[in-house]
Length: 85
Image 1 (tube, rainbow, N blue to C red):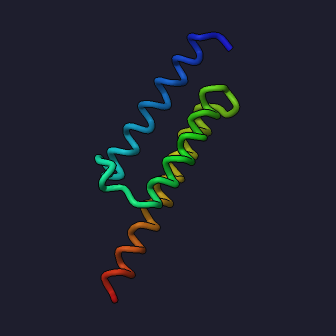
Image 2: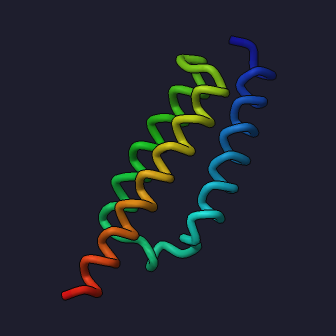
């Protein structure tokens, strides 16, 4: 794969992840939970797949968005269950 395509994929991955992290509200590592760490590992693997063209950029964007939505829903359920006790 030519270097220009890799650079373009890096830029796409960076912008998508930056937007998604900002939307999720996690700005500092100290705000992270073990679930956030697991999500970070999964997202890292997804970025690797994008950079080496194992998946299309559109598939990457949809997958990252879906993972973050699911992750946010799980966190909201944890907060609601924890506050009801």
